[in-house]
Length: 411
Image 1 (cartoon, helix red, strand yellow):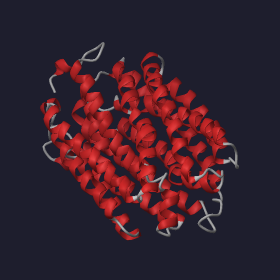
Image 2 (cartoon, one colour):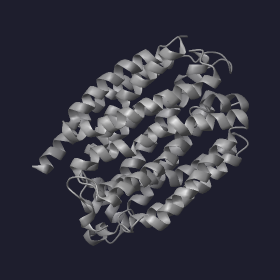
Image 3 (cartoon, helix red, strand yellow):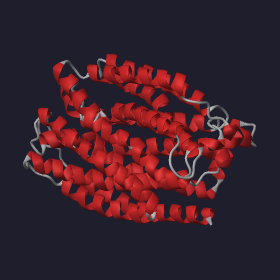
């Protein structure tokens, strides 16, 4: 990508297109992963999964994504980022298709491994592209827009996916993702420009040597640790949220789409505001405020008993407000640590640790949460909340370290 594309003020037309395309791309990746949680109650009942088996299915994607990210890290800065994106995205599409035709625990488990091997690397490639195309003071806004894919998955993806699962079966949800991903793949092929400036900066001829040199850098390792621990907290609650709402809070299966719909609409409003604030005030201060809000809402959420649907929605909205207020500034800060020559490798390792930490958290959650029967309340869900708050507190210290490193680099 020519350096002329990197503007210091407003966005160029191509940058606007790139933001839209990457947001749509992230929408499919996020939805593919996020949809397992809303489908959790259906899957555990229709396929007779235990909480441990469901946790394993969720973590299968995360662990395979982590491994593939590490393996790809040494090569991440040696090819045109557009070509890397296309290769891994087609693999993601194939893996998602196999999820759609899975008919038991073992076939779904293997299909999630395949999807993770390819899908887990796409996030790091997208982050490297964003860092190549946008200056640091623009990235908060960009992260806000691209992370709106998370909200979009709740407003459109999850409700539609749940509707298809109710009207047909859960397989139809994955086929929907495949169809949308194919359209985005075609857009990338014909509309995205090659991104090759980083190739001029390479000094390590050996991919493994490049990987090792990236891991060796102390500043990078602090960024890796911050990302991993943030993921540990987030992944603990996610796999069992739908089962918790249905069995503990007495939300009907048909009402889950409404909960995700309103939460998504709120996120659509919140994300650009958070992104803009992230570029205007201290990113660390915003992260700290978000962490405080998230901690309070996590404790409230994980201790919910049967309450009116409107109250469930309000709690969910404020919970995600806190989570997003952490995610956007932390991601923008982390993107500024790596040198341009190491950017692809750094993002790949970062994404890998994020996925593996999340997978470990999902397995951990599967052993803590218990359910006597398929319709009985989940036990010990509140313990997951307290564990998550502990990780939030630790991450405040680590993100402070990251913000100081970025400030020193800028100085």
